[in-house]
Image 1: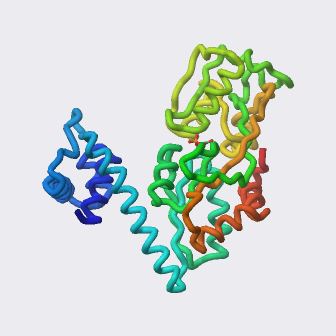
Image 2: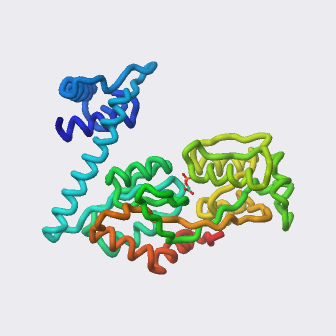
Image 3: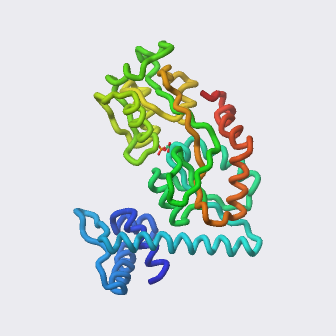
Length: 309
Ligand code: PGA
C-alpha cells in the first residue's frame, strides 16, 4: 500500500467516480483504476461497487478512506514539522466554510501574507462537514466556521463578530418598516443555501424558534446565487452581514428590521486541541487575536468606497 495509491483511493471516495478523481489528480483513468485494483488485491476485499454511472464505497472502503485521510494528513504534518525543525517556515493549510472563505478570510490572508512572505498558504473552501473532516484528518492546520463543533477534540476560538440579518429586494413592502415580527415573514419565499451549509442550519433554527412553517423555500447552492435571487425579487434570506456588505451599500438589497435580528454569532477558528501548533499556525492565531484582523475585514470594502453594514 503506497501513499500514492491511498491518495488516489481517497480522491475516488471524495469525487464518487474514477473519471472525476483522474481529472482532479491530473492523472489518467487507467492509473486510477490500477491503484484501486492494487489496493483491492492487497487487502483482498472489495473497496468500491457500482452505483449508477458512478461508484460508491463498500463498508470496507469507507473504513479504508477514513484511515487513508488520517495517514496522508499525518504524513503531510510530518513533512511540515520536519522542515520547520530545520528552520524553514511551515506551510499553512486552511479550510473555511463558504461564507468565511469568500467574505472574511481574504483580507486577513492579505495581512498575513504581507507579514510572512515565507509561509506558503493554501485555503480550501467547503461545507461544514468538509471543514471538520479536513481538520480531523490533519489535512488542514486551521479551519474556519460559524458554528463551533461539539466534542470531537476540535477547539473553536471566536475571533470576529458575525451578525446574521434578513435581507430582501430593495422594493420589498416591509423595507421601510422599523420593527417587523418574524412571524409576518412566514408567508414569504425564503431563499436558503444548500444542505450542509451552516447558514441553512441557522435559518432552520430561526424558523423553528419563531414557530413558523415556511410556506415556500427555494434552495440555491451559493451565497452569490442567494443574493442575486433576492435582489431579483425572488424572496428573502437570512445571511451573514459580511456577505452582503456591497449589496446593502449599493441599495441592491435592503436589510429588514426583523425583531430578534441581527442574530449575533461569531466566526471561529478551529483546530485540533491535542496537536502541537506549528510556528505558522501560531502566527496566524496571533493575527486573528489582534485588532489588525478585525480592521482588515471592516476596511476591506473601504478602498472601493463601500462602507460596512
Ligand atoms: P456556510 O457556513 O457558508 O457554509 O453557510 C456559515 C456558518 O458556518 O455559519
